[in-house]
Image (cartoon, rainbow, N blue to C red; front, top):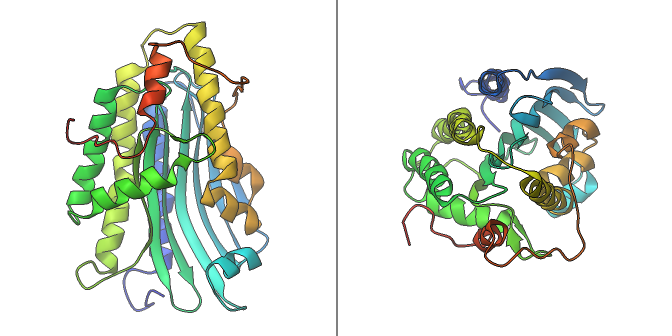
Length: 307
């Protein structure tokens, strides 16, 4: 547990995440041009609460959610058993979670989560990640995206990017489809202080990831928001959104944790797109951009160094 005599406390971490939500929402509203986030403040029965902000029917963003929460209380039995903890251990969790579903199929879906987790037994850690899910994979965009993440990681440790990139490949993977959710990114969890990377330094890394989100995503928005598209691209977008839904409902740990800890259902599921589609045994046309995109959805692609 963070020392209450230390300048860095769970309250200061929570305050930072709250401010990060504000700044990201302003940047996204500016990039969208017309869309505005509507705020829904909520309280959790077991302790804590948060602010869910959702943009719907924007010029660029068909639906986007930026959530902030600080919750605490008793761990659900399932969670406690998975962590090999005794009864009576309580938790404190705070963070920001983001998912953006753009209107134009050439603008990618993006997700980011940065969080802090603390237990009443004295254990604490940071977690999070950021990953990109293009409806159509553009190799240049994917390489640029990974380079931005590597630049942030390298400021703190040369081991971070390769380790967290592999972790993302493994985490953002749907075994039942045998495909990655998108082109990956980085994922980290249970990140605890060491002699080389004390708590303040770890929090600096988490802040670096959080603050990279708006510049990265707004750049991708401006690259592609004017790209032309038709009915074929829209139908493919709906299919890819369907795969996104499958991952979030079947595999995502954050979704499961939120529901198990009596979190607010609307806020937990705000990551789902407004529309999605499932087609039985869909097969893309040979040589099509859709087939090329599916070929990229695999683990182990070295996006930073050209093949």
